[in-house]
Image (cartoon, rainbow, N blue to C red; front, side, top):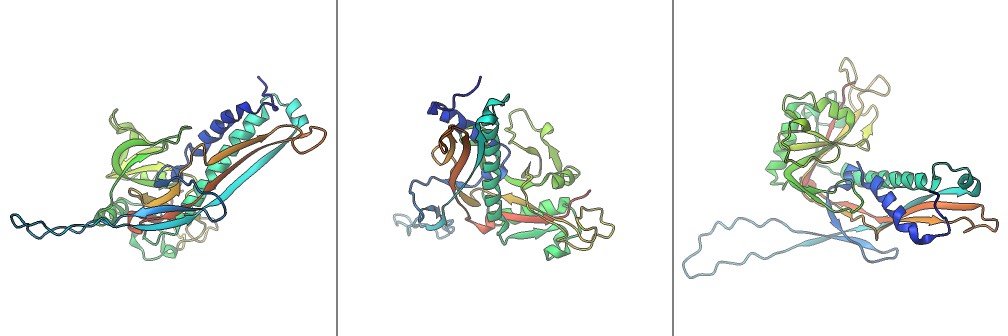
Length: 326
């Protein structure tokens, strides 16, 4: 059934069409601490509160004596809100010749574009984290000549545990309501499918097919290594020829001279912050035929959103850098 382009009542339908592809399989948007931004204007900021851990109270309490209080303190960090968006122009001829309803297709594609845009913005926040571990414990990225190993996964895990990092307990599934779903506590690893291939070969890898029926499986999750649950994401950073000499490593390369370096991200609870995506923040805008011309020849489908992300706790996430086998 063809949509009546002069009827604005169906805008909410397209909002939902935008939302699902935006959130579906966009892993960096599924985790982190969320805040809702209600202020507007060019100076709008997202405010995140950080609470330090309490020091142990090791002094014995004497009978009848009230011990010293532990005060709840916090600090606030801010991220500047910016607006992002794009649009798809369509014509009356497109609409007349449209056998598949191009407005619906354009809406779905806008959702995919919006999702990848915000996903990559959030990923760039994690890329800037200085808490880095390289494959086979080499000191620098340009010395990487190894894929991920079991020892690497254990090193990452022990580093997070040594920092007393809380595990992730919820995520946002692929749906149109943007609500969180509870999961069993664990650290979450976000990796490129090429790295996922190597992880599947590790002796400590446990496939989702081996999970119990009661365990919630996250979108894109393919398995776990000890207390790290892994999800696939094509938007993970790849640095072409960023590693050491390719030699006989059997790793992927762009120039056939040096190893391509893949970034994976292992995160704990609230490692980073981001603006909450909801129906009030992200908008689908559909303009009917004639909105910009006298002959009713032009219409458009667009999206826009106000967004920001920020690193909150460097110690709560690790950027793991490695090669990937062919």
